[in-house]
Length: 102
Length: 152
Image 1 (cartoon, chains in turn yellow, purple):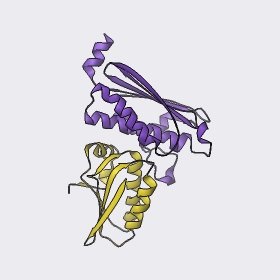
Image 2 (cartoon, helix red, strand yellow):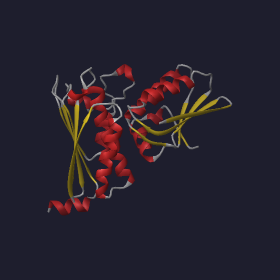
Image 3 (spheres, chains in turn purple, yellow):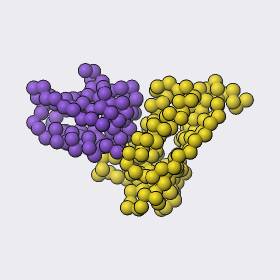
Image 4 (cartoon, helix red, strand yellow):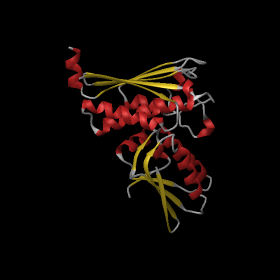
């Protein structure tokens, strides 16, 4: 599981690659929280390299959403693969974190 | 096609990753599509994660925390049974509801059984309060023609 990031102007891009489940959720959560401490206007989570995610991953995204909502920073979910997209759609996540294509 | 496998493994973080890969590789004999494989992987991951997070949340020695995963390929259908011997589910009907979780503060979504239900064709949960353990049985039709042929 890899967490990469880049900051372009005030947009933070976080790229997740590998398989996100309960075995590495704490790592991803910690890494993302470290990154979103910076002052940003929006967060784009790039899911194009994420091969697998279950409901534990949905929990990680929702947790970050709650943190950033307190600072009025929106989250966008970019280019999920088909399987990840199915989990996110079923969980209703796109209602609060819109899906975008990169 | 008929085939069977059984896997017994410790309740240990990281094993959900292993189990879903093994089950997906075994079910590949039915020539599933990529989408079907992903459905199976996701459902198995949810079931095994439940064992690790809920059934065996306490500090017991790992040898006392087995998870058993049986996979039966029958015709064109895959039947998966995930069994733990830990803390059971007091109210199974409530647990099946979307967003129901007993671990509110830990960023759990309560979507596990909802995902298993949606990604598989059949889901049965046998459990109870206390140290009842839980049996999760789920089936998915991979190749309907093959399944019908076998039933005849």
